[in-house]
Image (cartoon, rainbow, N blue to C red; front, side, top):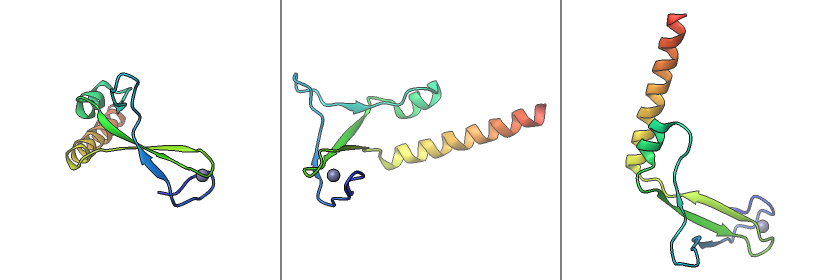
Length: 88
Ligand SMILES: [Zn+2]
């Protein structure tokens, strides 16, 4: 991963840790179905800090199972959109 601000390829990897020791997790908001699909317990968040300019970037640790679930969720969304168009 490169810094999106200054292009520095050497970012410092870390985590966001609260003062009580809890780590920040990612949980989707919005569609309740997607929330149920991917929100179970939240997913770990990785942070990458740029020592040159101070920019902080994040990534989420989704696993393969999450990707499969998301793809089937996406497929369902597309199917129901097509069905709704057919009903007009
Ligand atoms: Zn930078």
